[in-house]
Image (cartoon, rainbow, N blue to C red; front, side, top):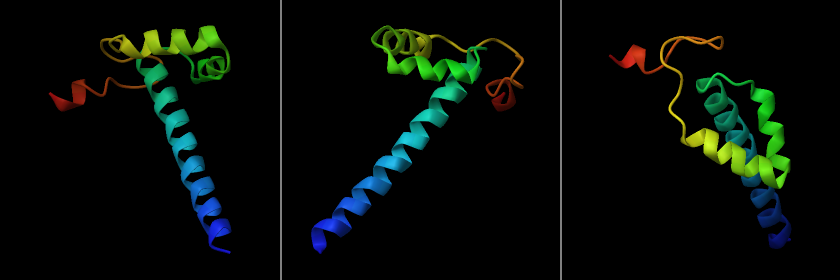
Length: 75
């Protein structure tokens, strides 16, 4: 009985973190002016490396096609 409750909690927490990581990835891709659909390349070995490299880049300066520069609003 207790094991099934723990399994459900682990499943819900895992689902939450999966949705959060997809959201973070899409927002980061938008920061560097790339489509959020690029997140699907994470299912390949080369794609994981590429997404990691892109995540290290600085976002585009100024506004891009996905909206205003979030850093400009802080100044």
